[in-house]
Image (tube, rainbow, N blue to C red; front, side, top):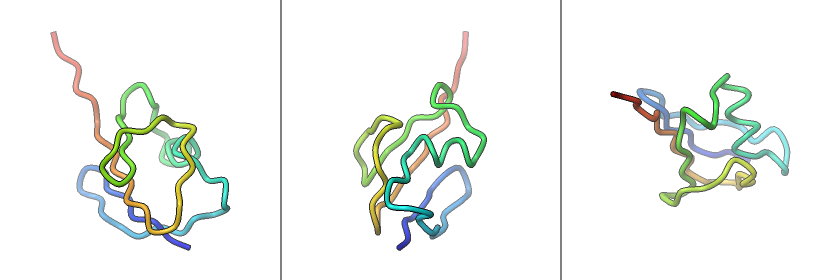
Amino acid sequence: MTFTLKYKDLNEKRELPNEDYTIKDLLDELELSAQTVVSKQNGELVIEDTVIQEDDEIQLVQIIYGG
């Protein structure tokens, strides 16, 4: 079972390690914080508790802070 991950220049198929694999698990694996990244699942904004399903497209968008 795989999903597609898009983040910055990354566009790759990844294996789902288990059936309860969440956005938070992915962020932890990538050492990213939900406070600095917006997550999309198949084009829709999602929260970090969302479970990733087979063939999903997960896009992570870096939040840019400015002042």
